[in-house]
Image (cartoon, rainbow, N blue to C red):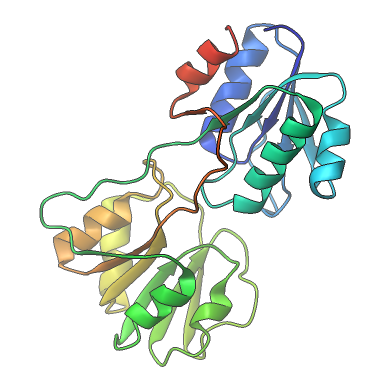
Amino acid sequence: MTGRVLVLGGTAEARRLAERLVAGGVDVLSSLAGRVADPVLPAGEVRIGGFGGTAGLAAALDGVAALVDATHPFAATMTAHAAAAAAATGTPLLRLQRPGWTAQPGDDWRWVDSLADAAIAVAGCRSVLLTTGRQGLAAFAGLGAHCVVRSVDPPEPPLPARATVVLARGPFTVEDERALMTEHGVDAVVTKDSGGPMTAAKLTAARQLGVPVVLVRRPPLPAGVPVVATVEEALAWLGR
């Protein structure tokens, strides 16, 4: 496949793909949503900000040979727009999405379908570590528990009434996570099934401390879109 590749990014996989493509002489444009104040920029040309929905993305595909959706596993709206825009323009589309996490012996995981369900699952806890990102915290606003809210940038209100905000960017070590959970007496962790190693240390720390983890399942992917789990598979699909 020759021509420009548009990578919908913001993930480590998107950055690695852009780096490999640029090194191979491919014309790459990476698009970032702009939700992180100081993002780690990929190699090659970069644009920041939304497209203005499906129609805007379809217009941006003019002259694009292939579209790779390598956004976060929970960026469901962007993934839906990518599928619709690719179908409308006849642009080849690939979804690059890292595998979800797999429970290990000793894990105490409780699966839920939404942040609202996660809030119900931890309603009786004393201290909860929330690592669900800075958006969507309104689901936990009514919790009586002390909530340790960790995100890269300041979280969007409304926040839980008893919230401690920790601004930090991963990767985190198991020792870091154990110390954070111990300091705040955490008796439950809430996270999304993001997958990957950058933020997996909290799962190991929770297992070691005997702390249950409430995991939000990933949203379903659009039908008919090919999906790969690795940068190498994406390169093969692109013929690189």
